[in-house]
Amino acid sequence: MALPDHVRHAQRRIAVLDGVYRRALLGLEAAQERKAEVLADADRHVRAARDRAEQAVAEMARQLSVPLTAELVDLPVREVRRIARAHPAPGDGRSEP
Image (cartoon, rainbow, N blue to C red; front, side, top):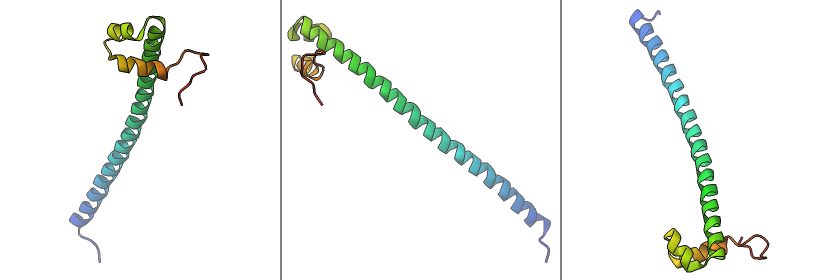
């Protein structure tokens, strides 16, 4: 038994719309994956920049003093001490894991 034209038309339209939806879904998944990669890369850049800033604070604390450094960079003395311990001078034999 042959299908009526309106049923065949509806089936074709459903197939086309389903294809459009599936391609859009694949595009969404690809965009989400790319977003995750971009965010991970940005996080790496932020960590590297934070590390450089903390190394600069640690070096300032070594060359000046912890209290003066804390005042200059507007951080609590406790935080400057923590940073200085976390970023020892190269070759001073101390290292944090």
